[in-house]
Image (cartoon, rainbow, N blue to C red; front, top):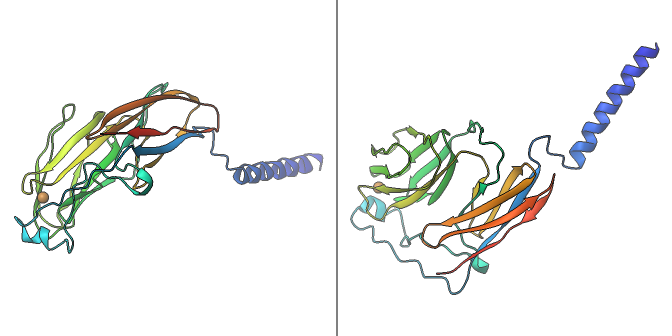
Length: 241
Ligand SMILES: [Cu+2]
């Protein structure tokens, strides 16, 4: 009888502690800290150039208003999009498994969506051609196997990159205006800024890290940050031309 009530107490305690954990947003024993912030463009934003797609009518007709270049994309309030932000130093281990979920690079309206893609080494990459026209996707890596694939509409195409590389230029051999980048990481602590320049590196273990921000035209910046257990730190970057 005593044993039974002791068992019930333990169960009640277990249920209680799990509920409290959920209420306080406890993230589990791994990680729990994060670094977030905004990348800004300082000064007057450059005007994106119009892309002439008349060479391929199937591309041109996908754009009722002309498409524009995406080398420097500045949102409202000066937020800089398409910047790769990542932990470049300070991780105790690099033994990270790639996520099961594939990364997706879409060719749509004869542009790469997203313009800058980040994924983990050996994570599956699904390349999708949503256009009626045929594309030829051709990444030019320095530290990975080069490939060059013709992809008609609807053809499935799956690839991986084995090693870290920031970042691999990607082009289309059919449409010379099509340019993008793929950044490959050996760990999961990376992000690409959204249209407002925002990013978040989640589930970091406590530690002191170098955070690097890379932009295809504006270069690279680094900052040091120390995060404690279950702590959120803010790191902002500012680029100018
Ligand atoms: Cu193309």
